[in-house]
Image 1: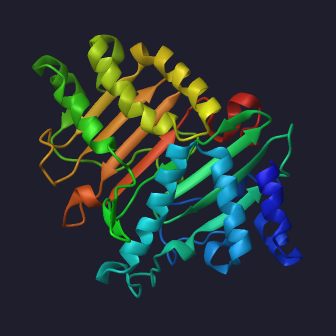
Image 2: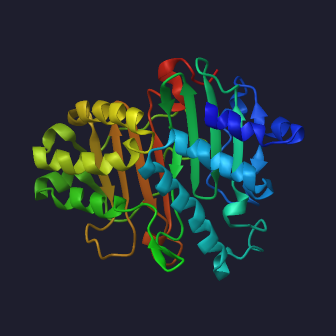
Length: 315
């Protein structure tokens, strides 16, 4: 809460009015998308319109809620949009006069930051949205959109891969399976798009694929390693509790796959993890090029999206 108060103190009165919403504003709490500027209208304050003090203060908010790993991932996804903007496809002027780049991300605070009462913040734009609901010591960062384009880019001579080893860890899971296990897990030889992406709040998805109880201990460990890229997004204390929960539910957690199982294939993959308290989807986007370079993804908790498990759910 202190970091959020510090951010608000950097704003003018008009900016405070623009960035803050009532907690019972369900429409705003659900108002997020992976679509770029020009195809989706967001409310709040746009990053590019904030002065440097406000920008630095907002980064402090993200750092206070996310783990070091989570912050690095979100920051990398966000700044991939600058790399996209520098390409012909990201230069703007396309359908809907699309505009890319880090400036076109938005901040909203829903509810009054409090040590005891529930409140939420949103930070998002093209390919990444963090919805964080906070009540006391409890934090939920579901639903959040975990995507990137390009998947790998250069920043000051350094190779940046925001989603890290998610894809290679997913291949490790599917390729650890015996033939009969793969026949359960692999549901199609071409990728599909997200099922529970933006705008799909409150909907459910059928658990498909291979069940965790049908995996060996070593295979379960590989699946948990994959899941940890999502469970560890939030701050270390909450991440530890989250991973303990997801580990305890591994026998009832399913893994499903669409696409090639050859890691060198650029036609793209889709995988899904569904369990009692988790839905993860990862979908390469086949836009006529390398589907491994354009990723859409979602992280949900059907028991705690928008903080519903601690009484902060949608009204």
